[in-house]
Length: 302
Image 1 (cartoon, helix red, strand yellow):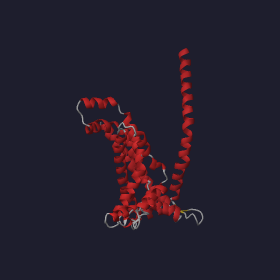
Image 2 (cartoon, helix red, strand yellow):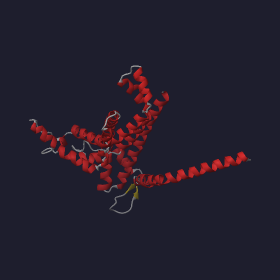
Image 3 (cartoon, helix red, strand yellow):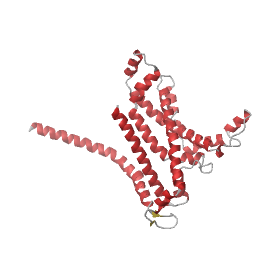
Image 4 (cartoon, helix red, strand yellow):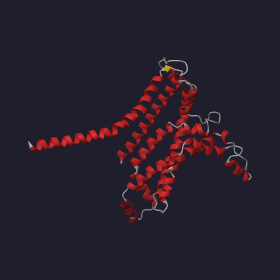
């Protein structure tokens, strides 16, 4: 009887702890439900309607908007461009942030300053920081072309080149995103047992071998998180395109998210914007699921 009463008190204590935990996380679930799930459901429903925000109430049209999406080469090209441009941004950000984290993990008197400075571009508003790039890329009196002229070189009209516009989009994206990713990598690096490196040094392992056989395997969960969250981020990328290239030259850097913005906010075609958003969301979930499956399978094989 005493044991039963004690177990009952233990269960009651666990229940109280569970209720406190739910009370703490409930506001976050409500926030996600209101600002993420609710707009997702509304966007999905709008995809089945013909709705111009200036012309009255939505009219149910079924799969018409989705047929327009898949029947239009324009939307398909925008989706493909969103994927390959986003893929380039993701690869560059993952690689550079990892290398930056390795550098920030080195003991140095100013390492605290450098760790803080890499995060600053992420804090500043994109509309403000993009002004720096626009000033540099001005074809007439931009900083880069003025520098080229001082060297006797011809100026480059950046806006007329798809290669250069994609290049600067990647640079701007990585410049803003590399800091948070590097900080996450750095946290993972510091969680690895230092005795493993000491044992490797005793065995004569080089720095490259230590990174290959200790650092990278020890960061597999961190890498999975950075890859999946980065994947979702690049599939939602549009502000970089809007601020840096505006889709130029001649729409060759335009992406699906930027088209969704124009459909919904500028043209008020909420039905088409909802359908395109739904397709992009499903493609993102599918790619993330495949990536997660590949990462999980790799962990199981180990």
